[in-house]
Length: 399
Image (cartoon, rainbow, N blue to C red; front, top):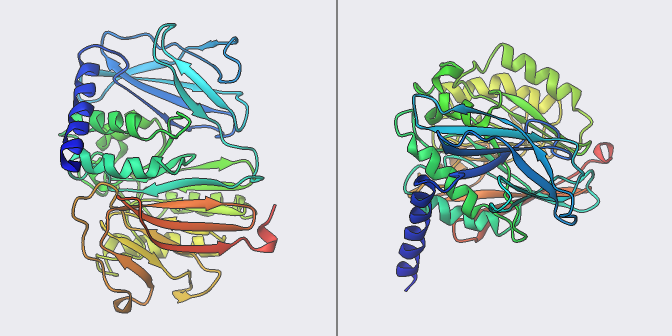
């Protein structure tokens, strides 16, 4: 019975995508941030080439008598892929507020929620990577477990659609699945905070942004950047050698960025290649580069945790500083298996000095932030918590 219902649900999903592609617009809708998550939201939608209208209508959910209109822009998808990407950034929004938006007076109404101005109430988010590795059904299973937790947003650390610029329909399929399954219980779309991985780039490593045309076109974001949530949370999104070198300019930017945010109580990094791998060798070239260039800066400026990917298994390190286990050190969590059908077998913790826990599981990480602590839960595609750890917020870090 369960197998039949699963097959039926996947059939209905693909049928809905097909109907979209046959002319019901937009094909898919997704959210990101290029500005302040407390007061902005970037809305993106994909249509057929004929649908050139860029305007949308929005209002606060609690006052639907005051609809406003906002125009955006559009561009053709790369490599002659026959669709348009539309983008509009809404600004001057109210924090911690649900908004409605739609693309025509009679069209479907979507919802999103802005981030709160402070941590008077805990917030939470999910993190993972290596997403559309196998069938879309594996992505959907994990999506549904993540969405059931009502996260404020999702960190996606690269190897998103596995298109390698040749199987580009996978981007449409992944975004369509995201729109339909990454929705909170109160009907809000869950924003994406993306990072780039080797399978998002033609050539994998040591390339340029032009070699990742779909990633950059779809998200409209730099390869590395920071997102600040008021005075309580900062995210740094990094490029682990795919379209920007790890060392040099990017590392100098990271040092300046973390220094400027040293007083922020919750600080996290997102990137693809792990500094402390659980499957690949400790001396793997790109892991060494991440450790030696970024790891020391994470430690110097008090990063709380880094979300890593690439190895297709789960790991949690001990808190690390100066290549030692230190209670106030940096946690490294990963290693990317959101949509991997058969995760790889990781090293046993006793085989690597830095590993506290590993598991061969498809998973995502659930993070809960409050004024006093950070909680991390590793959750598999069935919704089972199989690892957890917490960090106290140090007195000097409290707002």
